Image 1: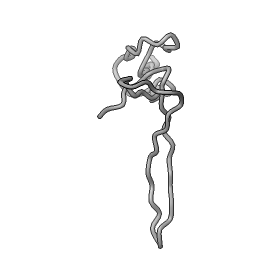
Image 2: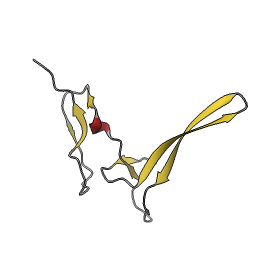
Image 3: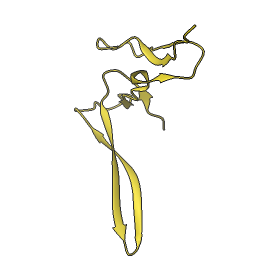
Length: 80
């Protein structure tokens, strides 16, 4: 039902678009990036830590991957 974040994901998303008559349709496709075992949680890398966000403090990542970058989201550092 839900797709959680991981720094070592097993799926990737791609923006898909197509034209039918005079309409442009937009969809998001989810594709496996490696073999997914039965019962394994589906995860993708949301890459929220790549940009500083307007949040009060950094949010740690809890993915427990050996490739974990340490933070799910990074806060903007205020300049004094």
